[in-house]
Image (cartoon, rainbow, N blue to C red; front, side, top):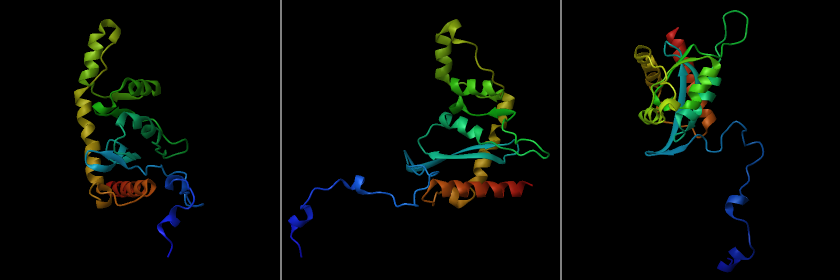
Length: 195
């Protein structure tokens, strides 16, 4: 058996740099963090979801738990593809976006106006304070219709139905791509039940 000095007979790079992924094992569509992020409860994954007026999922985006909703709003809306019954390109632009206060940033509202999408998003209290403090330079308050905003519970009910699947409520998959595939399969099942 070798002595204890045998382990350190020559310098070597750190273990982090020594580890190289095996060829053919790395998937280009898999994020480095595997959509696992830190939250108060530990490791979490967040599902961003866009659904239609009947509560059926249209687009899904899986991110780490600490990722803010307003950052993921644009990529989520760009994933919407609804095929037409006849010929033509799939429909990519929703008629209206109803979202909660997490999506009330100026940049997202400007993006929706640029694409011609009507939106009903309540204004945060600190944003309202900043706008009023600026006076006439603060601009007009964004339009908000309470009756339209009451229909936002459709998305909450869609999340409740998705969490009826145990694998979606508690993530068992290691990789983000397999977890997103499980959420997509559950969405297909929700569509099949609604038809």
